[in-house]
Image 1 (spheres, rainbow, N blue to C red):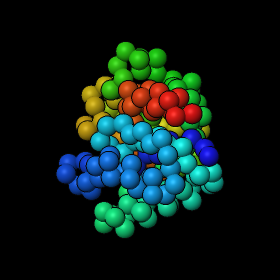
Image 2 (image 1 turned 135 degrees about the vertical axis):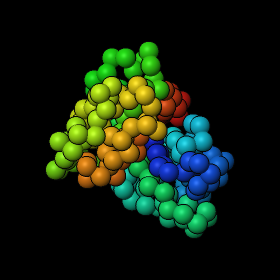
Image 3 (image 1 turned 90 degrees about the horizontal axis):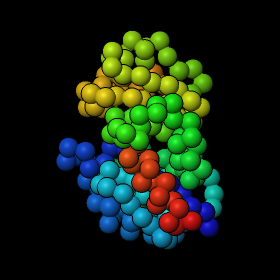
Image 4 (image 1 turned 90 degrees about the vertical axis):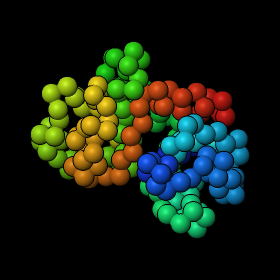
Length: 180
């Protein structure tokens, strides 16, 4: 058995794609997970589950959500070490003091040909970003909802991306420590 961090994108946002965390917990348990912990209503879970390829487990979760709820969210399954790595590599020191303005884009894979120029062109004067391996760090002090860069990052990175603010990243780290 292995500890997994499960990130779903695009659920419970603006009333679209509702997936209560109790339902997500049930789905994960049906797939063989135990010690499931969720964090807020936006698709964050940590669990102990079967070993295997993360992409295959993500597909199984996506298919189970589709069968049960009628929509297919993007799903990333990460080892807790990825959360630890993101925390170590975060280039924005203000994360702890302003955890809602610093975001980590967790990437399904390392981009092979990201369009950094297009990302720079989308960046507002107050925003900063840095691509570090499989993470896209974004400091958006005016918020993600207003950020053109955040809205279009996935397109210009060329890989599936799901963002979490620094508070959520810290919470996931804590949940992973609880179940390990």
